[in-house]
Image (tube, rainbow, N blue to C red; front, side, top):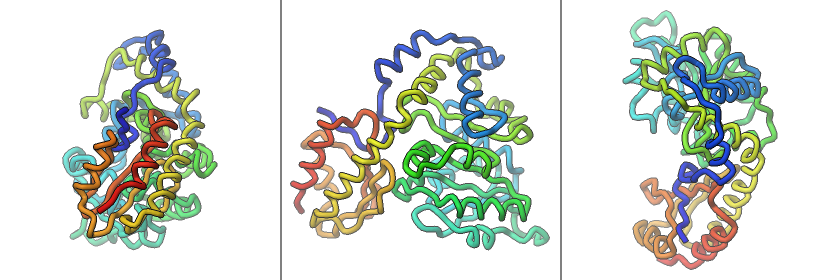
Length: 341
């Protein structure tokens, strides 16, 4: 039995999802004639109370398009030092938009409104790049799946309005945050100018992310997607997977969160564990003691067909997901208890 906990991107479509994909009505999406894609975009836009949405082949492309819509070359955006847009998108901020990043030293990938405001370059000081955008990530990947406090996000929104800055949310795992906190999509749609949400992580789709935004900012989104090579044709088969996931896989994210909490509880009792980031959703990040060889840990887990992600410096990541069954869960909990240095 293969147990892959490296990411929630490793899932495969369920039989029901495959059936929905098989029967999808398709058309040429470059001409905006794919009926299923159009319905998915309209549905997700309405969920967040936004006017426009656009399907992208990846979360990275959706984020990069959002950044480009808000900025001009030579400007700067603000994000946390753990931010996915800075760490895991191949330098796309510089490559695609010619923009620099001003990093904030937040907590578990989250920063305060005061920190955000302090990071803004003085607009009349032409020696530094002009700040034009603030980005947040919810949940935070490197921050262990942590969820932002909505009041803090609202305070940052006020900073954006005060300084006339754009506000973008990397919501790759926003679905997890919504389920964990009980907040509504409309709350986030009201705060942010643009939001990217991923379909191929917790929701279990094979491909796809959606960028939503207000009418004016989204006007050029399809042009930017074209420039980035994201124009696709009969992709209703992918959009059908997204429609199915929203109907069947959203509320069940709570099951992934509970399994992650169970894993964290077991790790707390293990002598080889030095530290665990508090678990809120489906990501467990833990650090092992210096006397435990990291390769030994990976090898002992591999002997039981369990795969996790190494993050360097003795840190590891476990991500629960749709394909992580109860039977697999019991094996993982039992195995973690048997690890020794």
